[in-house]
Length: 81
Image 1 (spheres, rainbow, N blue to C red):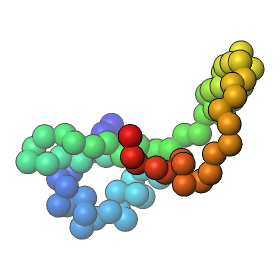
Image 2: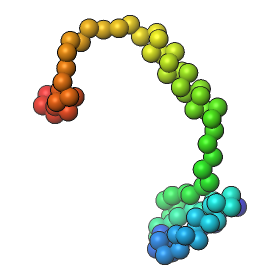
Image 3: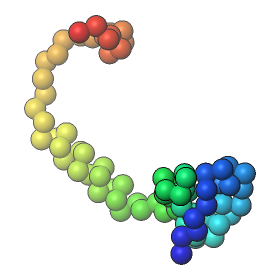
Image 4: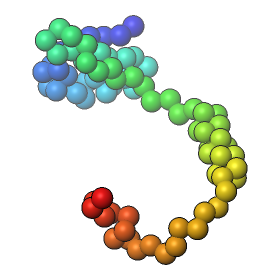
């Protein structure tokens, strides 16, 4: 069950909220009575990461190589159009 708490209270009681989440609970943060965020336990799903990784590699293998020439690090960060 989600526990709702105001942003100001969440700020004051952050350690307590982390303990609640660590035990498997969820906390909804509200601002002026409106929900704005939800803190939930972190669950690492290795299957999703592996699927995303294999999809990326499939896509990269399907791409044709292109000749772009040489570039410098400054070229990567050049903001000029």
